[in-house]
Image (cartoon, rainbow, N blue to C red; front, side, top):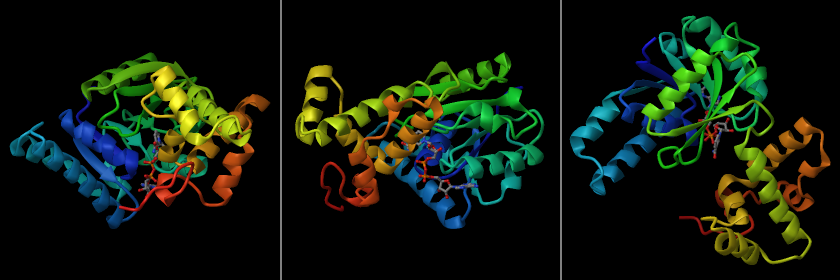
Length: 285
Ligand code: NAD
């Protein structure tokens, strides 16, 4: 089947970026969220990104128009019924995602491929609520989507070779580099990244070094573009804690236990950039 139409569900941080790269790759895109306000906000962010690209001379006004003309917004799930691929990017909540996929399974044609952008939820589990586990796959984009090269392509236990091939080709068409991995808590990206951040929080908590110095060691010594604590502030400390909890419970292994300081900061509402205070302080623009 030739992929022509992509339905993106969730117009937030990840969803608007996925819609954008899909349209840039020439696909027709329908972007769905639960309210007009969220849909419009997603479309506005796409428009803003493209306007900046024109300003920087990366594309002309004509290209921008062509890209935006390929994207439409909706709040109705039925509008996605003839999509060839669905890419889901809604809240990281297993029940909400399962309810959505159950509904989509009834609405979409039986050939439609389902992809989830989940950071942690097992693909095999999400696929199990549909009648098409062979056509279900993880498509884990990185943030910010337009700028990051990687798409982690995660096979569930019943994902077919054909589905994996189609989604790998689709990722390449979007200008990304797909890397295939199997299903497991945190896949590869978060299984490696989150324990490193968590360990940095333990270093801070144990008084091994102050935040700036922990970050400097990783930037100057390991060539990381950002230190782990600054990165935690960017991702959101609540998200980091959520992923560590999934790893801890998923592996049933104490090496993944979330640092007590991380828990305390989340309880205190110190979530990083989005609340103005995390390991560092941020002034609101
Ligand atoms: P976000 O909060 O920015 O956006 C989520 C959007 O989904 C919201 O606009 C919300 O209104 C919408 N939504 C919720 N339920 C819906 C439904 N039933 N139908 C349609 N829309 C619905 O979240 P995000 O950061 O974009 O994360 C989305 C997904 O991507 C999550 O699974 C997350 O784990 C994953 N992810 C996030 C990042 C990141 O750095 N933010 C990176 C990789 C993967």
